[in-house]
Amino acid sequence: LQSLGGARYSTLKEGGRASAGGSHRLLKLLVVGEAAVSLILLVGAGLLLKSFVRILEVRPGFEAEGVLTMRIALPDQKYGKPEQVRTFYRDLFARIQSLPGVEAAGGVNILPLSGGGQSGTVTVDTRALPPDKTTPEADWRPATPGFFKALHIPLIRGRFLNEADTETSAPVAVVDETLAQTYWPNDDPIGKRLRRGGMMSKAPWMTVVGVVRRGLLAGSSEP
Image 1: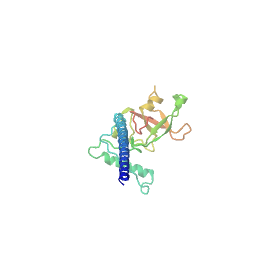
Image 2 (image 1 turned 90 degrees about the vertical axis):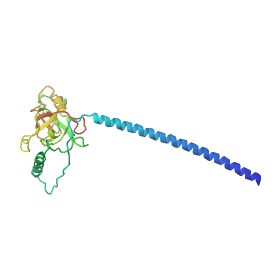
Image 3 (image 1 turned 120 degrees about the vertical axis):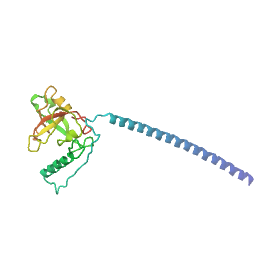
Image 4 (image 1 turned 45 degrees about the vertical axis):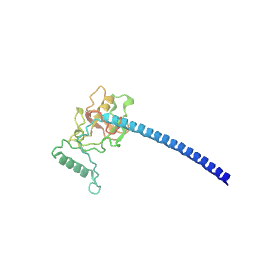
């Protein structure tokens, strides 16, 4: 009995050593795994910080400081006609403009750098252009007269949109300097024409009345 008990005790001790050795190996694996995860998190944080710094260094082409924005969706039951919508916004901007401290008030269909936008082919008047530059790609946004002033977007040439530019007047457009330099590099872009769509588009021609500083309104590299 004594001999058998000793064998049992020896076996238990050996099992204890094996169990302890396995625990140490598991602990080492956990420590290594934790260090690897920490390293990945540090690298990820560094890349995120670097990307954030780059974003801060980007010049969007407008000033957001002191600008208050909001989104408005009008109910179709009350504003089902285009004229009703135009009247609402015209009165709204006039009331906002009259508030103390307000420099300018305007609207646009999609806010700059909001992750959305409208883009596609734009046909430029081809009378003085080579064939490979007749259908550029561009971002476009319907805007009201006060939009450019509200965001302090610099005017380089011509004029901004104004109250005389209505749905009944000749269609006009304000383009950025990138599009102007690309398609009218040695000419005055004011008075030139372009329209949305390809060469067979039936969209009305718009006359360029102004050129503004290049901006990243949609986060895109397109003009």
